[in-house]
Image (cartoon, rainbow, N blue to C red):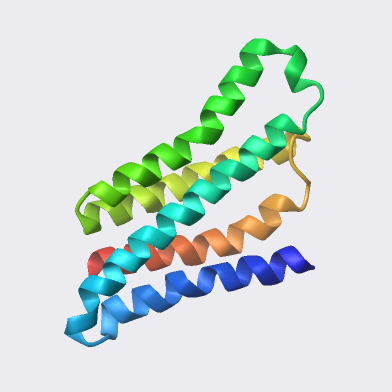
Length: 142
């Protein structure tokens, strides 16, 4: 399945930058930290965009104005969090990213349970999210 391969490749930068932060040469730690924060922010925004796509692709959502506004609002929150993380000190920013990735996973699981996302989507996201969160927490503890 293409989503598995692409999702797996998407985790590689998390693992690579976290590894550089943990065991790389000291002169690369700052650059790797910035790269990890930037990449994490981009991917978190992407995941919010996926939720936006689920909402706008739902023909029934347009009939429920309050629910539509709530679901669209939830879908833009990851981008706002990601942007603030880029302005924050790195270690607390990594913790915020990790926590938000987990929250987005819960939103994805709920969406799938309510038939608002493909049933296979949480199965794809779980292992990827564990690697992403482990990378972010590892970089925080370095």
